[in-house]
Length: 154
Image (cartoon, rainbow, N blue to C red; front, side):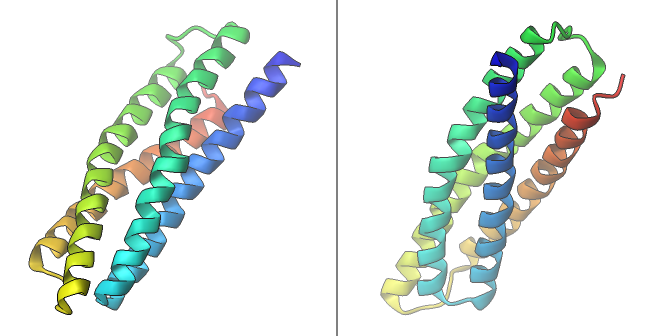
């Protein structure tokens, strides 16, 4: 029963992590494409909130439950799929930290543009390109981690 509960929590948190990431990315891209500062500011605020509520929480839960499952199943940490999962998870996390910083800055720039009734500044679009560039490897790293978690190849 302990293993099943830990596995359920691990799967649930991985689903929330991945779902929140892809969902917030989708809405941030859609909002940015409108080039409408009030829309971008409002969506950006919700994206930042969702990242703190869901992504930050699950980023902590994932390794805790993952290592606990490895312990309960007596799987060596040196198993290749475990090593790859950890490495890819670290890459995704290393991408996520600056993404959050960028999202906060992008939201503020959009809010300022909205208040001034002006266009989104060039800095917004530089941040946006970097945000996309960091999101792509994080997304694919987590897709591979999902595969490794399910397939557990030797």
